[in-house]
Image 1 (cartoon, rainbow, N blue to C red):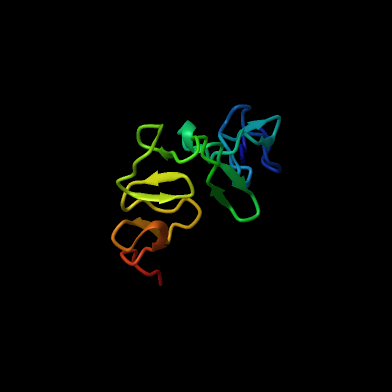
Image 2: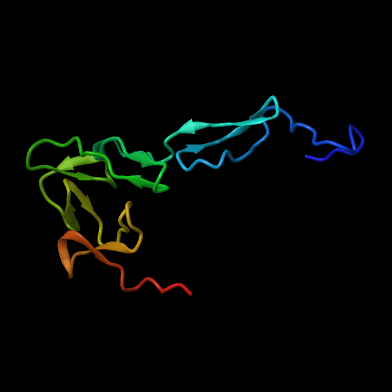
Amino acid sequence: MCRANLDDQAWTDRPSGASCEDGRFCTSGDTCQAGKCQAGAKDPCDDGVSCTGAETCDEQANSCGAGVPTCGSGELCDPIADVCGLTCDGCAIDGVCYPDGTANLRNECEVCSVDRDPFAFVSNTSRAAGP
């Protein structure tokens, strides 16, 4: 940052602990430390649901990936209740029961549509096309 009262010919370090952005997708809460932006917490992709498993962060693709569900054989993870169960009122996709209308974590242009396909994400036709 420029602070002319300290040096009008050079940049002055921001205070340690000040918020910054390190430019990496897979970190969050970056802070300034001794004039450099230091990465914060790794992997901001955690959805907070234990039965969906540990989500992954792909730095190259700037995207989050779904984890491997922790449920037993024949069970589905209910991400709303964070429990494993045998029934699903939404889309049963890769061991997770997604509520109707839920966007695909890996591709926001796809959604769960029980009417169109209860076992796979489908194209989100309600999403407006960009310019």
